[in-house]
Length: 67
Image 1 (cartoon, rainbow, N blue to C red):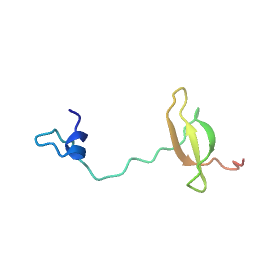
Image 2: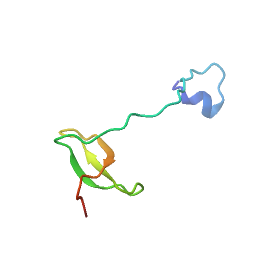
Image 3: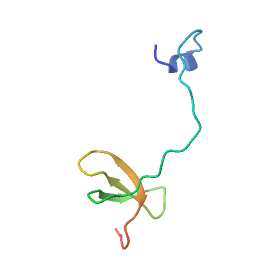
Image 4: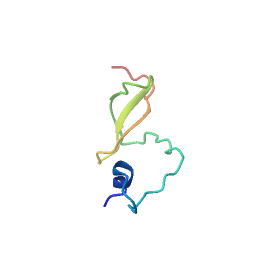
């Protein structure tokens, strides 16, 4: 059974997944990344798509960026 079953259904002996406190590293735009648009919930931040992948991330908007 997936680890979440023990927490959701209170099953005895269900596998559990460890929880770690921390933060994800900040992602910065690199050459080849493309701006999709502004982040709706973070002023001055834009949504980018990384190079040739579908990875999307939020980072500071480039200088002079306007909609």
